[in-house]
Image (cartoon, rainbow, N blue to C red; front, side):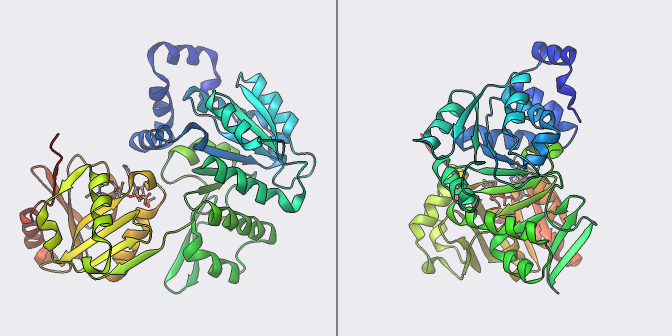
Length: 411
Ligand SMILES: CC(C)(COP(=O)(O)OP(=O)(O)OC[C@H]1O[C@@H](n2cnc3c(N)ncnc32)[C@H](O)[C@@H]1OP(=O)(O)O)[C@@H](O)C(=O)NCCC(=O)NCCS
């Protein structure tokens, strides 16, 4: 399969009229949504170059279709995004596919540097190659089989990698028939056409292992990935088919199995149970605003706090149910899934919630999918979920009348 970008005439057209960022967004619009592509592009660009991604490819994929991987990498190179490529990690029928990958990259004009795992300063060599605009290829084929994932873990920790993509012919993990796996009567995993959509290691791993839902090879792979996440909790791992590499990187839904560490969320009843200064720091840096002195006196119903103060959701008593007054995840940790974990913790305890957001807030798209209804007024949107219809008008009035706790920083 080939992406349309390999056609020379079309490339030429894009070079003339579009910047690389417009180019990726235009292309990704055809597989996902424009805002999502822009959102991920911004996230990737904010990272140190070498932390962007490590892509580990099954040797069978490289032996059979190295060009499909190279085409996606060429696309990334045009965005000035260079992943570290890992070969020889995943068992395959023959050799690691290193030669095929090198050949395909050269053919597609993608600069690359070869790094032998274990050589002196191998992680620094890989980092330098990426920083200077080349993909580095780290071959694990000659590493002792039992030490390969430990060596990969060293690499991920050393580079501060945000995304690990494992490319397999089979795509994601688990069964393929759309539906769900019920780990318990109330704990389900959604299955898409390419396997289980999301696995939260903290919440799902032990039940998934106990239920024997994965074949032994996949169960071992997930166990190895779990070890990687223990050492690099910021990591997001995608297991996908090589045909879906770009979709996996640039769309919210992805196209394989997304594995995330899962966060430890504490449920507190008020500010006296936490470090108030740390909480203020989290809110002020995330919103880039100052908290008013009155904030300390606000009555709280529950505070859901990520254990390392990377994210928080604060609920106040509502006229019915609860009013979500603050929802924030530290900029560095955004996109890792902490917001989703906080959100689920809130919904587990509160069947009726309402909240408000400024119209321009980019997260409003997501809120729209999570709410039962929304009302727009002035600069605000008010959302509700689980509120009885007869009380919606009152909750809207109440949400709009609540004081503002965060004000612009005076410069
Ligand atoms: C809103 C916020 C708390 C989300 O936290 P996060 O940890 O980045 O969120 P996650 O990675 O868990 O993503 C949660 C969901 O939101 C979606 N999302 C998050 N930011 C998004 C954005 N800018 N545009 C589109 N979707 C977005 C994700 O796709 C994800 O959807 P899914 O779980 O259905 O797949 C965080 O972006 C933030 O603190 N923003 C600044 C403060 C703010 O505006 N708070 C809301 C005030 S009303």
